[in-house]
Image (tube, rainbow, N blue to C red; front, side, top):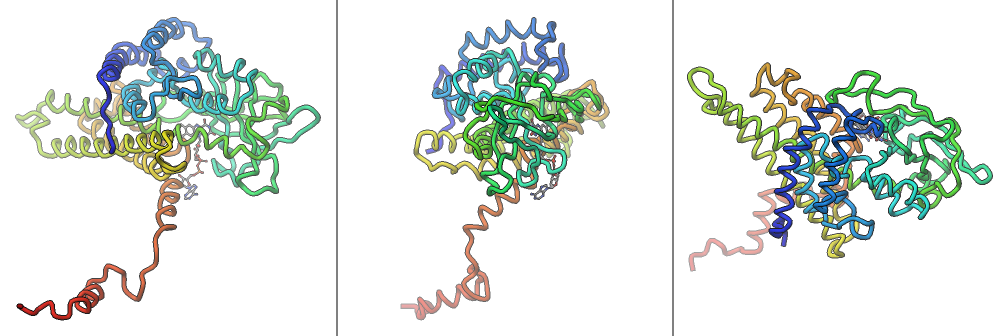
Length: 436
Ligand SMILES: Cc1cc2nc3c(=O)[nH]c(=O)nc-3n(C[C@H](O)[C@H](O)[C@H](O)COP(=O)(O)OP(=O)(O)OC[C@H]3O[C@@H](n4cnc5c(N)ncnc54)[C@H](O)[C@@H]3O)c2cc1C
């Protein structure tokens, strides 16, 4: 039975989080806007505010809750994490304050699963402590995130791996202590065995940031963004800086991507709820034509559609979280969540676009101004569509998964063709019109 209820003790934690995020994390959003302040671990003013907040989170046992017990986390499971992430999604700073910021969350999982003890000490421990940030370097400028098009390669030279090639949109590379880089190690192997995953510390000779690309809606400028264009100029790393075995890069990457997508979706629920809260406040605050905005039916329609759309999306996200928990508990097979994670990924950008767009509309010129956060959020909806793979690719994968199970019609007409079915029913009951 699907059950999203939580015990009172956990609800008390959620209540604490909701208040804390509103009071403290949203204040950080105002005092230190923009991602540079968030990821730059040398920016002292923000760190001075951040550290005491992180201590409070740790004291509540709410630090880095994405990791399961086997990986050193509290192991709340995905449904509870979903409820927590909804709250964190309201604020840009909240994931950093709670130790659950992407891409560090997924990178920590990879290191915990595949790193050596020494690598865990050197990279995972400070990452988990929030002392450093990391980067996941997969997408390439010429071929996007399609592994079949990757050209960044690595080869063995004595006791080292040599890495050469370019990566595009490697988030936070400019502030990262290390990047996890996926490289072609055997161009002749089949696609799923062609790549391997490496740790590349960013102080490795040959590591170069070509540009810090800025994106719309993220309070960045054209060349002062977080989506870094990176070149690996024959960077040399020790042999054991490969994570997993040669050819397992794809498998290692998959270990993080599913989690990343569902966590983005959970946070999107919270951001959309905040947009609806703003919509409701506006509707009962502003008058036009002698009535409150909320008394106009077009406005009521926008509010009702947004509430319904968010409820549908929230249930999809929580059901997906529940399926992942069932898999973890051994009650569902590995891979049972794949389609649902795809559904969340596809729905996420659309729901966010629709709800934030309606909230912006109800705020009129104020909404499009930078005096409200809505215009930045609205501009960011396509980032949600592209990050972790374009929406179109997920739509296509989802449809193909269902098409694989579909069977062709048994004859000339579809199996639901009424005359054909009626003929079969009459053949089964030839005397159906008899009165006796
Ligand atoms: C905010 C943000 C952060 C990111 N962070 C990272 C990061 O940290 N590390 C990293 O490696 N990457 C990162 N990315 C990159 C992201 O993974 C890619 O943007 C995404 O995979 C798509 O690649 P692309 O942008 O090259 O688009 P393209 O691959 O060029 O796709 C463009 C469009 O072409 C169409 N298309 C492409 N492929 C198909 C297909 N198979 N079937 C049908 N239509 C298709 C779709 O309409 C798609 O929207 C980030 C992106 C964003 C926006």
